[in-house]
Image (cartoon, rainbow, N blue to C red; front, top):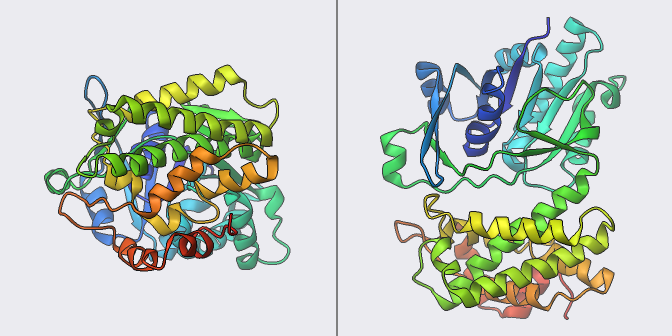
Length: 379
């Protein structure tokens, strides 16, 4: 039997503050699956958690009832997923390697129980072409005659919700609580669903999801990066993103950089976004970045340099697209150069672990990083 239930792989910040919250408030039972046994035990003890909305007025939302299962408890996960109404993934690319075999087993059991009733999976991952990556991985795990195209809806998303790093004290006060901004629009691929699109108020289905995924990368992620990297150059002791944007000069440079990247985006997807839509989106993002109550840090936004300077991420992808389309990218290039010397620390004076190795490589010179980390030619 089919239930109004969502199985959420990944009980982290996006899973709890966004996916779990949105579907719970729409009447869905929420079942979290995670590798963190301690977290799952706490979810099952309390059967609820709170999302603290950090806006002009702070608001607390209690998300309940919720349950949790450890990913390693494969049989229980399979049972829950086999009759779920929908599922979601927010585990990161590495986490997918552990989750996909379990999902594949559940899909086979589901077909035995429910026949050819599809399962839609919302892919709340920060990666391009996530649907194809997961489709290929599932095919490797499923029997050769399993009709993936007909029975699995791989629904790409553009996740624009900002969830800051919480202080150690906040986590100690309540390990299950999560802070988030008021923004709650979950942009999803209208074409990805095999069943009817769920009647959930915060869903925003889009026909051309690839354009919207790239809008997030080219404007939101890039803009955030520009604030952190350019800001660290001028204000190396600044802790919060809003402090950087209080500098009107940097605010204006960041805005122009976002507009330049948006121009490249519009060249890639002609007719998808109007100039007015783009400008309104950029100005709204900058206001959200300046949310003092959110307390988003320069460290969080800028750290993890290997990933954020990678060939498929927020700076290099727009630059490569600018080269292909003949559009200017000089302002984005300035942000990339600034990123190479980024060195913000967390509240405990610690660097992001992988960034320590990046700093060592950066001693080999800017061109070394551009070639070997960014994957760009000698420009």
